Length: 635
Image (tube, rainbow, N blue to C red; front, side, top):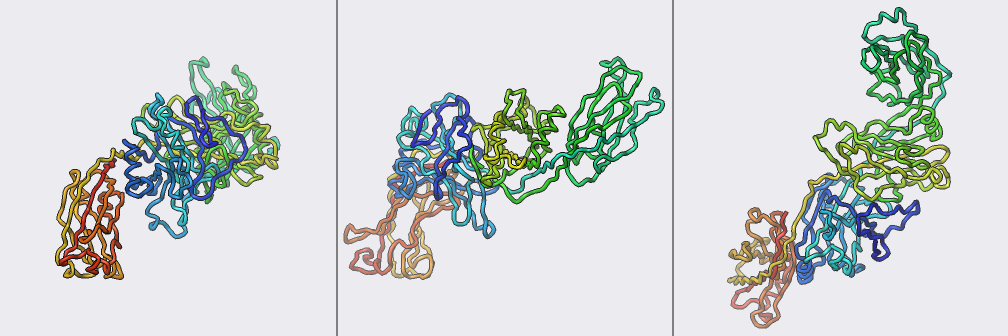
């Protein structure tokens, strides 16, 4: 473990970082934030940049007068983005001894008025010295809250991702043989989460229903239905059938309690009931109490509470029923081991009486509450909450939370799903959501369909109202799960090549060239196997015309050119009487979307037309292009 500017930097893979507790951390200001750092062995979902010569890139940017490398536009979570790396710190000069990174949202003109987008962002740096194939140093953009993009803030990042000294030391693994890899992952947090309200349990006054079955010994193997009866304003029915089995030496009888109402004012009932038998001529023992939940999709189907080798009567001697109702809230959003204002994106459970729930589960012999099935990131899930810890995982005295993937029969063989998984508890005192994450990628597969945190929070801390998790017996839990796929976009920046190609263009009869916005092209010329040409507008290319000369360098046939090009070039108007040339240099990206770069106000026409200045001699203007270095950027 090492420290870099007071921030935790984990350089090994020996488990997740230690939990920092419930203390709130301080976030930075503005568009940049400090970083929380840890490692993982899964590549970022959305974009990877491989730089084959970091020193040449740094030199090229410096000579070209720009401070950052900008990626191509890539799509992630339904939006378009650019990844930006500052090798020598950000443009504000507040982190010159560090590498800075940021993410910029693109095509914002297509977004609605007043748009704002909440995101969970992580930046990555590949540790090449680790034996595992992809170990990332992750910098979370925010230490408190979520990343919020809007019209006035279209980019967010980390000004001090890592110091140049630490980065440049090959022993740390980030820059080896002048090569390095950066990445970014961005999940957009929507506001259409699913929610359940667990209301306080209701005591039913020993509602008993007795079903007398005549001629029991001659029952067929078909299903048999009792009369319908009411308990706590809900309509119920008993179902009984006989089947043969080798394990019970012949026959057994199954007894099922069914919720009859097809449409009720809630989505699910949590029921604690005990089924009893009367005296029958068969050998068996009494049936234990059972708890089950009936969802809206199960309302008109039989839901078995027990199976036994008996049963002809049923007594609901104590039924505790809690009702749930669902809603979709316009709220949602994340970070690690900390607080945020926004609710989880995917599921929220509001428990109106935690003590009633705990008592009900305890008396019914169930260790956990299980949510309804909900959809998130293209899969189906259920959330399990253990109020007293998961005994099978030895977490007594803590609250445990686990997420289980459902409907796995529909998935391909040997399936595995990597996720960014967060659990939430609402802090009612701070009016914020406390976030729990182990710092690692959660991997679901056939032998492990459930992931979670067995010691999420101790009951002692949770039960203390001063901490805000449980106030007036009410609490709220949530979960957010984003699937990390391997279909990321990526670019490979090759080492820059010294081109040193000069092309001179003599423009004769300059004074006869006219027409507002008219463009004139030079002949094509070759530089590093690519074709180029110059374009100039003798009266400018925008209003008011007639003030400036516009001059551009253009890549010919960019659709044929497969890679994106980063080019350091210089354009000049030559002074034919002295060495006082008009020069401008740049380092820009050429591709099919932006095939030309230059200056719309390269030179004042009055200065050029003044014969004493020496730019036009015998009505001839000389333009020179110098392509200095070039680097290809392959997808």
